[in-house]
Length: 213
Image 1 (cartoon, helix red, strand yellow):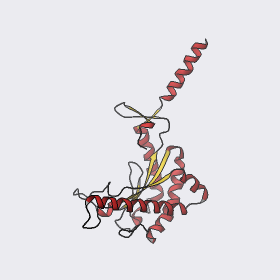
Image 2: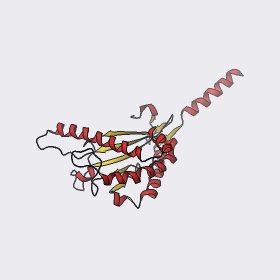
Image 3: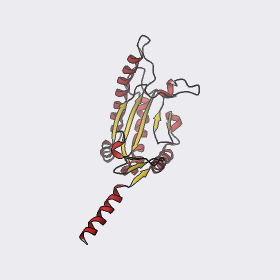
Image 4: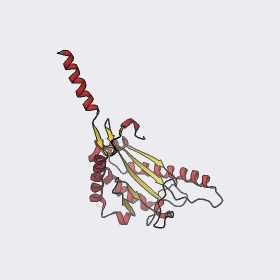
């Protein structure tokens, strides 16, 4: 009887360990966050020169009608500071509803591929990398100042910053670099998979430990 009980417990534990979120479930969650953000910001996006990606709820502030930083500078322009002061507390208020599902919020700095005419491609990339890292950090630092204490404590457990230089350029309809849209500040959400497994459509399984951190 004891042996049967042990086997039963082991089967239950094994079943629990094989729980997973499907790709569709992750996409459904991202879709919910996207619609929640759209409900909050749909009337502000155009004036902010911002867009929200429906595929993953990423919020991007582009350089089309908004100068976020002067060329070669990591100092946040006053207009962009005003936008962040309006945007970030509302943003945190929305995404905090999905606390258990959010692993990380990352502020990304992106640049165009431009730099000095005499610089090599490597030099341009590295100089833009340094610049984008400083810009992303400064946006994070300023964003934290816009929050009240309880929201600040929560977001500090999730948030980080990263500069990506010109590694993820945006292209125009002709397949060429869109320099204005490529110069952007991005607020990106990473979904928390916890101890679950991700089941791909091909029925391959990946443990959460195999997901790129």
